[in-house]
Amino acid sequence: MKQHIHHKPVKPKSIHLLIPLAALLLFAPPSPAQDTQDTQPAQKAEKAKKAKDPQVAKNTQDSKDLKEITPPAADNTGKPPPLPLHQIEGNGGIFSTLSAYIVNPPRNGEPVGRPATGFAYIDLGHQMNLEALTITESPYKRIEIGYGWNRLGLGDLPQVLGISTHEVQVHNANLRFQLLEENEFGQNWLPAVTFGVHYKYNDGIATVNKELGGALYSLTGIKKDNGTDFTLYASKLIKGLPRPVLLEAGGRATEAVWDGLGGFTNKYNFVFEGNVVVFLTDNFALAGEYKQQPTDYNAIGNVFKVESDWWTLDAAYVVNKNLTLAGGYGHFGNVLNHEANGVWGITTKWEF
Image (cartoon, rainbow, N blue to C red; front, side, top):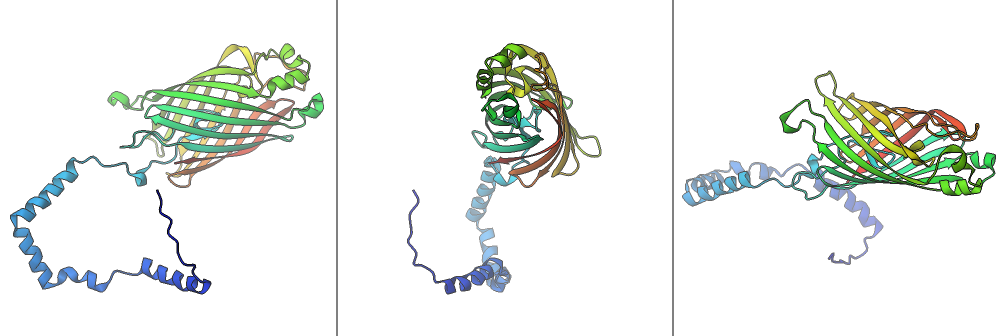
């Protein structure tokens, strides 16, 4: 419990005097007396006497032995860079695609990992936008638990359809398990492999269907407001090139339409996802990603179009051991009643 210590108020004039005094104390060079202390003949004689003392020598050796056998505690200053990023569903990845690496796993000496949070915003044009808030926690080295809140602003679609719903929200609950660590069993060719289960719930699509008199579900093949995805991803870092290159590829079994933002069908589709990341420096990377989208549902004229595959080009900068910033250019094809090509977005992640 913290103790509350009451200080006397400091007058403004005193504050101006304290600031240069504090700076002087912080940045003042060591005292000359301290620098020359060990050079004094009396001090040297005392040290030589102690060195010949068997008991002192034994205590010194015991201290060295203790340091050698004691495992080092977790070193927060040795934290690795905050990679991978958060993708919009609340998993480790780039923007829309995933990574087989686990976000912020336990460090040496820590019983559990630390959380990481993220935010993303994409301007889709035509008054439509996509926002995401994400959080992950890795309680064990191979397990990642994540949550992502996605909001899609419907732009001018409500005016076209004559409905009052202006947005839909998707809640993503994720659980991922790393089946293989990279280079496990001493095999340098082996990639990291991670399996994931992702439950999605769309808050808003049922209301849109109701306002349309059931036409959305009956005409498109979209049948419900929730579904579960299954993913399998592999990641491999290639170090033999002039700069490191990360290759990531995976498959997804999904019932979702536009990642669940358009609802869910009753049929699973198997789609491909992947990305390539080039580390130009230790702090700056360029990435390209591709995400296939299912198309087994019907359009409603130009009001509700069948979606297209996604691809993005991204640049990420590691600010420090905790913060990563990224920006990207995206091609999302058909989004509801418009095309969303050549759009821009930003994303950020903070690791504790």
